[in-house]
Amino acid sequence: MKDTTTHTILARLLQATGVPTEAALSGPLGVSSQAIYDARRRGKIPDAWIRIIAENYAVSADWLFFGRGPMRVDESKENLHHTQSCDVDLILIPMVEARLSAGQGSLLTGGNCERTYAFRSDFLYRKGNPDNMVLMRVSGDSMQPDILNNDVVLIDQSKRDILPGRIYAVGFEEAIYLKRIDMLPGKVILKSANPAYPPVELDIRDQQGDSFRVIGQVLWSGREYV
Image (tube, rainbow, N blue to C red; front, side, top):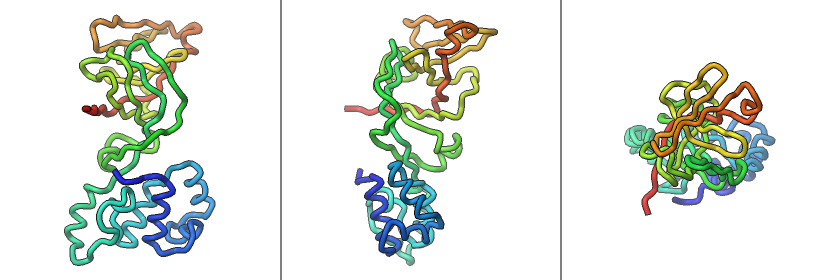
């Protein structure tokens, strides 16, 4: 994959629009120069900016995101580009450094981003708001065979209402787990897919309630093969 850092994407936006400075991008994007500065500081370019420049300047979104293929869209191939645009309309989701534990549990670091992964925008918007989504890597085997050790999961941090049968990222004390959840009066039961791990019952009416939190619902899982 080509470079998708904030600095590189901003450079491509400059090249595509022909404006002289990053602050001048505020005109083509219809935002303030402060917004440009804030995006660079946060290290994340809003996906809407990519769509605006791609549409208004006949530039390939795939090129803006990844530097792949030609920058300009050939007007003689406008219909072909329209067909392909759904395939390249991508949204970058950050992978956070914290490792979810699906076994004994450990929280290695806080929510700094180490990389991003691209997903089709239509897929993400069917699931919810991409701005609320993060990726985390799983450590442990308690959710096998559904989710394996070292899998990557997509989590919507806005989906915290418990629905039967769904998998959630939950925090308890200093650990983060992937579990299915049953709610009983005053109690939470955390269930693993792996039968080797018995259910864990938490009494949320006492101090355990202060230590327990639902982080978000798991929407997708992916696996890498070496």
